[in-house]
Length: 443
Ligand SMILES: [Zn+2]
Ligand SMILES: [Zn+2]
Image 1 (spheres, rainbow, N blue to C red):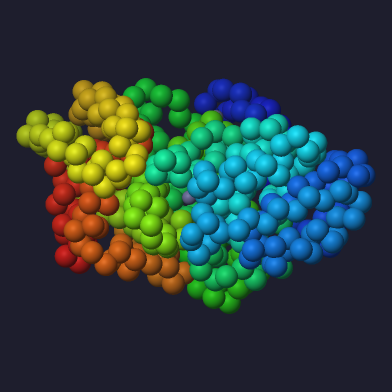
Image 2 (image 1 turned 180 degrees about the horizontal axis):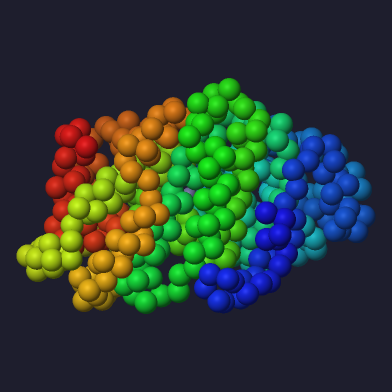
């Protein structure tokens, strides 16, 4: 990990130059955080500490006391309507007020996904370096160069500078709520499938691809992936390895220059759930990572089904299938009334990419099978990993309405323009069939 930080190098895999502008990731004790920051910032620098009610109690308050060599400006976000803070644009203004024209030298986020994403977004806008103090190993956003949040009802992901410093206290993340540790574990399972989707997309649309993200995360993943039963025991070594892998997952996005190596079709399913909950003023169905884990299992079923096909069969199916895009768009936008226009734009781009995909798919199918299909786990393996970690595997564990499950799984492919396995399955007429089997419990 150390070798990857604060460096610029020519890649052995893709030949391009990758630049990773994270200065340091340190595992240390919370009590030493003042000394750590002194390495980089002058005494009396102004530090804004961003927390919510919960993370203030977990660590924020303590950090505020420890940082006595600095001027502190704590900001504890108060929930707006929902039980816990979610990354939505409405919170952005509140943080902005606390930062703007105040000569802040460092923005210290104390929390998990939402706090980190909001902090990165503000830091990016005001050119303030961000340091993250994770309170749970729940996702890979501490090191990722993107911020994902809900704006006008759509879950969007925008590029931002990653956190420059990450300070992890193993004791604190090991004591995080079990559901958050599970969520980080399940989120990390997306890696193979996201990389496979990225590989497919690069083969079809002739975009850049780099094998390095897949390589660095695969190595770290082997340390814990089949040991999910250690989550309940709060095993320190397991949780440490998980945190390291999540951080590598974020770095893999810096290398790729996009979220592609960590976010494929499985994430679209999770984003769709977040958008649906937001649109209907409901609490989120589950934590991000748990939703992703469910998406990973579903995508593994789709890959498994497509694995059996050869190029001739793909060609036949591609010619038979006709999708009524107008109808799809109508159903999709009717679910997200406040974000109609934005969704229509994305839809258009997706249909355009799909058109290109259909031109190349048959000719490139062998190549896809030889590469992308060798990167992933089987449905049995995924189910086993998730079960060991006591994580949900099926959507019906968090969504009770079968008709809604059908919509989620058949429409989520349209909320982002990148090509994934879900697009291929739908365009060859298999997605609907897979979804129906999945709902009936046959898969
Ligand atoms: Zn590369
Ligand atoms: Zn994720």
